[in-house]
Image (cartoon, rainbow, N blue to C red; front, side, top):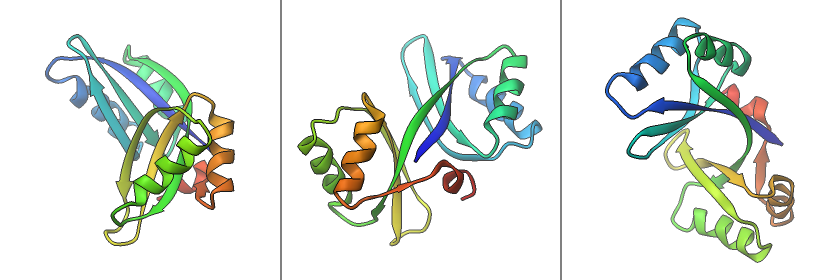
Length: 143
């Protein structure tokens, strides 16, 4: 039920995102989802990819610092209140959300929200107990 994600630490300057995406393109890696957050000096690019092993090696060979983490992918109806229903369930189980990002495969259908919890197993359990569909990593990487 966990999805493997890589975080790439990039300097906050022009051309760094291009460099990362060029390395991935050259390695024939498909980006399934991403999030980019920055500070004044560096950014953290979080990526879900079709081939984490190849991507990690390619990026490290180019001098990037790469870290693997597990996140959770949850399907939710693409409608007003969809995110609130998940937030409410998590709050009811005292689950802390460290960060989240989302994408919609097709408008009007389901959205997929990627979560990082302080306790990933408790987060998964809370979602399942509340009737949410937690997607396996293989499904996300094949979208």
